[in-house]
Length: 125
Image (cartoon, rainbow, N blue to C red):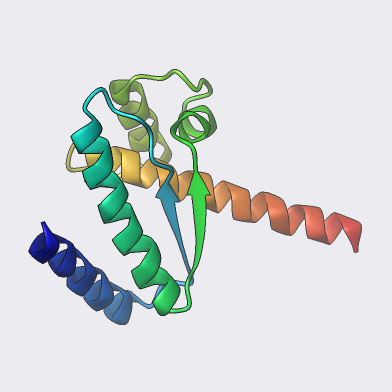
């Protein structure tokens, strides 16, 4: 596991160096039926948070139900529904399965959140 986490950090550092993103977003940890899976997910998420923080990138964190509600309209949406809506929102995107659709849904949620915050700031000024 330590080697896998180190590899994740290395790949993320390389991706950040190549793409130079201005922001990042992650899904908050949810409790799986399997506590070992939850622990492994938390460790990987920690690597992502640490790597992005070290690169000076602000990270938005979103609960799975919020992501589903933002993309599908209901917090109890199934993976297939999330995949379908992401495909509709990003026409032409090649989405490599449900996990990729979930990641894109988190990104869409973050983009909406940032846009809402900017709109709120503009209205207050």
